Length: 101
Image (cartoon, rainbow, N blue to C red; front, side):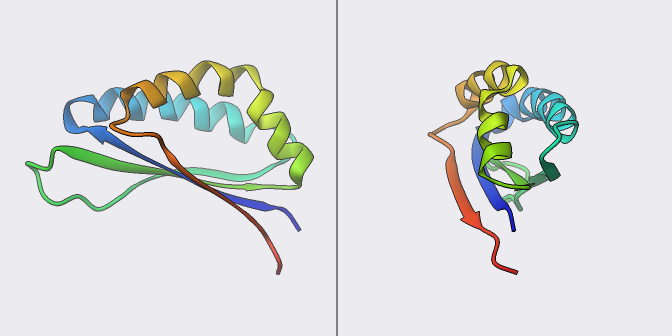
């Protein structure tokens, strides 16, 4: 049935624009992968304009484990993930769930 993936990043407010620019490139390249069913970047609600960090979440759906593994090995993933992680305040929180229905 596929794999559902959530990857949550918290980024200092002053780095949010750069994060979103890099993330946009990752999303566009990932959507072109054969096993990608959907790939989105969402912005989590903030605590206000003066919040020290912005929350972003990638929400992905992959056809199967092979498609997900291929994504992790792709050139664009290998290029952008280190850059996105370097902007984050902590390690990203990543959940991979099998789709049942």
